[in-house]
Length: 137
Image (tube, rainbow, N blue to C red; front, side, top):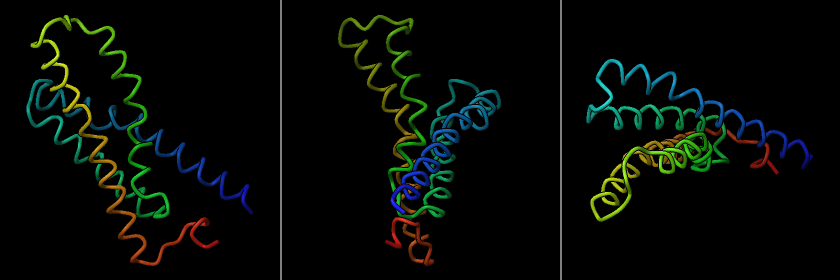
């Protein structure tokens, strides 16, 4: 029984990671072509999309809660590390660090939105009576 729960949790994680990989291609890239890559509405719209996907995942697997949002964001982490390491701007001086921190704040919006959306979806799912295999034990 415990092995089945572990396999189910691995499937849910894999689904969240795959959705996180697909989201930039389904939402971010098309939206950046429509509104422009430098548009101030690009990251909030991406955050809303992550919140919606997180809420759907949280609704169907309420026992996982906000952690599904973190798994949804997991695909972004290697990209952020590569962007910092191989970015075109120098990181010397306060202006470079200020810009880097502002960029990281914008890039972390999908993480926060995905976690909040997944937790809201989990709360709604629990109120609707959905239970995962782990919650039934």
